[in-house]
Image (cartoon, rainbow, N blue to C red):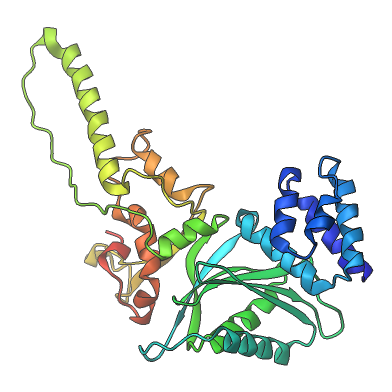
Length: 346
């Protein structure tokens, strides 16, 4: 077994929590049950990793088997990586039968025609998700197994989840290969990014329930209050206001936890308003800007603004409809200069 393969397997085993090493090696399936029983999983991880490497040497493991172990690790711990959502589009609406063998062949051919030194591994899971691991090299160096890109593609949808390598220059090659292999016409990045792959899937596949704003606050009616009842009235108003905020927040965000989104951005377009006599603008052109949001848990942060007294309830639809905006992003971009109301600043 090559020394680089042995070192890569050793490092992969060291990343796994000790109590889960045996179960993950069983999912890997490269070592026999008798070989697994010969390992003392109660010893320190360094010794466990050395034992695993020794058994892999007996089985003549190569980089292909080592890559499969890495895919299993990333499938179990997807939150160790940062994921971005991409959407592919077709010129025609007809649906085509998806052939996994044909997809793999086209994907490999496209990448290897552009870059000779590249390692590509596939693994299909039961939810129709195809996990692809790509280790990139250069025209003069072998693939770097520690700087990999990951792709999760659901064959029944146009959505692709990519965790790009630190080698950003290879991302266009990866996107081209995906478009060609899946018979789509174009691919563009959506404005969503997170460590939580499942939360991104919940958003784009609409697998979570979010209510959209239908509540509009009514102005309070003034009523005369006797001086001796003033304090009691203030306390009652505070309680009522807190209940109102919680009720409105529940109507907007729903009862369940929000998907874990860490980054979102979208474009705003509005007309600049000024006194015509001031003649500030010679041309009546819209004012455009790019709005970016980032937080360890963006949607939960927005949900907590009103209860914390940091914003009025209900929040602006510009904030509460971020997931919906992301799903409609490409429809909006295709209509040049046309933005829905929720994108236009008042």
